[in-house]
Every structure is written in C-alpha cells, then in structure tokens.
Image 1 (spheres, one colour):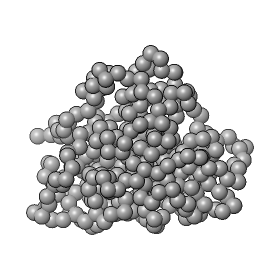
Image 2: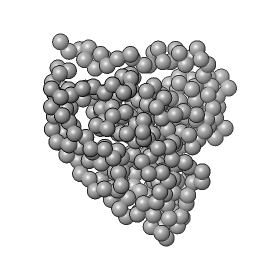
Image 3: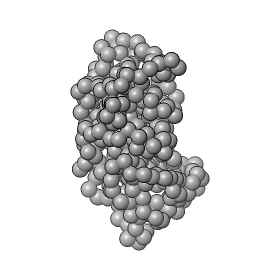
Length: 304
C-alpha cells in the first residue's frame, strides 16, 4: 500500500507551492531528500484543549470573532510592529508553518519556524491523509504541497498546550475579507491562504490519497498574515514569508482569498500571558512522549 501511494505522489502533472515548481519524477529516479532529518508526525485531533492550565496561568479568555451586523469598518487600520519571518532557505515550501511562527512571534512567543515545524506539525510523506489533517510532502523540500487551516489551528493549540498556556487558535474559515479587516481592527493579525505573487489559481486534481479521497491542489498556494488595510489606497498590508512586509491590491487579494476557500486563523489569549511559558521541563518531556510519535507507522497500522 505504501509503495502505491508513494508512486501516486511522484507521478502526474507539475504543481506549485510556496514559489517552487513541484515536478514529480519517475519512481525509478526518485531519491528521498538527504539534507534534512525525517519529520515526526503527531496524532490528529480536532477536539478543544481540555487540560486545566498550570497553576499561575490566567484562565482562558473567550473571544467572540463575529462582526456585528451594524458594524462600520474604519477607512484604514494597521497593527504596528508586525515583522515577517522568511521561510527560505530552510523551508522552501513551508509557508504555513512560517506564517504561524511570525504570528506567534508577534505575540511574544519565542519559537523558531524549524523547531515549530519539526516538533509540532503533522507531516505525511506518503499521501495518506488530507491537507485538513496533515502537511502533505516535505516543507524542507521544493516539492512539498502544504496544509489547510485546521492543521495550523492544531499546531498552534498543541504548542500552547505544550507551554501550559491559556492561549488558543480559532479557525475562522469562511469569513469575508471585510470580516478579516474587522479582526485587524480588534487587534488580531489574521493568518490567511492566498497565492505566491497574487497569481490566479484554480484547484486541479493531483492523485487519489491513501485514505480514498481525491486530492485537489491550488497551484501557487501560499500562506501569509494580514495585519492591516487601507480603503483609500485600496491595499492590504501583508507579512508574506517569501517577500517580507508588503502591500497587495485589495480587489485582487479578495478574489484570490475567496478562491482559496476563505481560510483564516487567529490566535487568542490573555495579554498578560502572551509569550509566557508555564510548563516545566518535566511537563514538556511528558507532553512530547504522549503526543509525538516517532514515525508514520500509525498511518498504516490497520492495513495488511
């Protein structure tokens, strides 16, 4: 079964992710990447965190992300001090985890993109699960695919759980760009899915996943953080992990944001606990032992 799925991953048309052409070679020519150590995946769970916070950690703050019907947006709003983390050279197709890293860094959480990727992101080299469950491919290689909003929410929640933090992520997929701007006005930078260089894109069939679902992928898929907008200039302020802090045309940005499924994630928590680590080394080791499998065998343990 593994060989069949790997074959599917390596054959077919080219795709594009985070600025690189994904060219799948013939199986006979394929050599696994040697420049990076293998990834370790975590079990997939979409349930909310249930463990009580470590003593001294403030209780969770419930955030209502809905924009009131009668709310009128300002003409412009920009969150000060947001800095881009560039994904290259370490993670050429790791825009999603890099975007989460720069958003965590903005709130004071001291984590780098590679550590966050290696320790907390579920990665599937075999093409078994969907992009709502794992990152498909290798973010350290130029032929990785990517992941969707539920994966980034899980990575963020796992990281906060690891720290014993009250912080958590909200998956706001489905909100309009105006509602993204509302989050900006409330002080929340928004992680969104777009495309490299604002290229037009449409989902195309790639192959059949091991779980039985058809895998469709948007060429030039990219992930970035929106931290401002200006209706007068008609621009969106973006931290693009391939370009830096840039402005994109608002109308084009909206069209691509809609095409990419209006995927959006924000991070929430007490301001006084932002960036704080409430977990001991012993608790961290216990968390990793319980939540971090050493290989991908769990993907296939029910198969002959």
